[in-house]
Length: 356
Image 1 (spheres, rainbow, N blue to C red):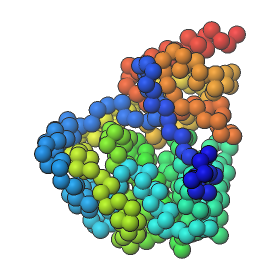
Image 2: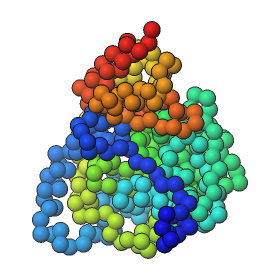
Image 3: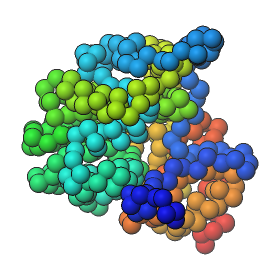
Image 4: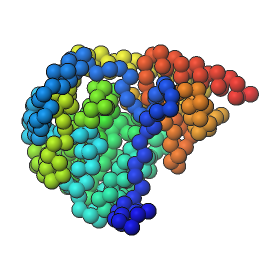
C-alpha cells in the first residue's frame, strides 16, 4: 500500500477479469468470447482503415456508427451512445445518473463488476436474492432505491426474463432509472429496445464483444431517451472525448451492416449450446436454461473447484466462481463444435474414473 494512494484506491476491491493465459495453448471457454472470427467485411474495413489516416483523431461523436445503430435498432441517432465497450458505458452510468450516497439495486448473483462500480463512485447497494432456481423475481426490487440495474440475460447464470416482465418493472418504478445490461441478448433473449419509445426511465446497454466477435476492439453502445444519452455524453466528454478509435468505429459499422453473417454465427452458437446442454445433462450435470453463449452447470458428485482444476490440467479453461450459492457451478463458454466435443469427452472420462 502506497502513501500516495487515495482512500478509494485503498479500500476498493477491483473486478477480476477472466484469465487470459500466456503459459500454454488452451481450449479457451472462460471469458465468453465468440468462437468464430469477425465478419470478413469487418476485416476488410479494418484493412482499409490502417493507413496514414491513423495520424488523425477519430470522430469523437462516432457519427457513422451511431447512424448505423439507429437504423438497425429503429431509434433516433440522438438516442444512441457509443463507448469503449459496454463496461465503460456502465461505469459512465454511475456518475451520469446517481450521486454519492445514492442506492442502486441489482440481483445478489449477477455481473460482479456492478458492486465495484458502486464502490468506486460512492454508491450503496441493495441486492435482491435470486429464486432457488436462479431466476430473477423482478417484483423483489425495492421501492426506496435510486436506480435498478439488471443484466438480462443474467450473468453468470444465463437465465433471461421476458419483455412483459421488464415492462411491468418499468411501470412499477417509473420514477427510477432502470438500466438493462443486454450483453448476451442476441443469443435468444428478448431485447428491451422496443420499450424505449414508451419509457423515458429505460436505458439499454449492449456490446459488440460477444455476438459480433469484436471483444478485442472494445465497442459498446447504449440506447435510450435523448436526455439520458446527453448525460452520458457529458460524462464522456469530461473524461475522454475519443473513447472509440478509428479502427473500432469502422469495424463496428461493418459488423452491424453484415446482417447475414451475424445471423448465421448466432444460429451456429445457439445450436451448439443446445446440443452441448443435452450431452452434459446425460452425464449427470445440472444445466441451467441459457439464453447466452455460455452454460452454467454443476454436478452433484464432483465439486465445481475440482472440475475446474481438472479441466485446466487437461488444457481446457472454464470459469469458476467462489460466490455463495454458486461455488459448485462452472460457467462454460460455447466454443466451436470441435472444442465442445473435446470438453464433453474430457468430462466423460473424468467422471468415469472419479465416480464409483
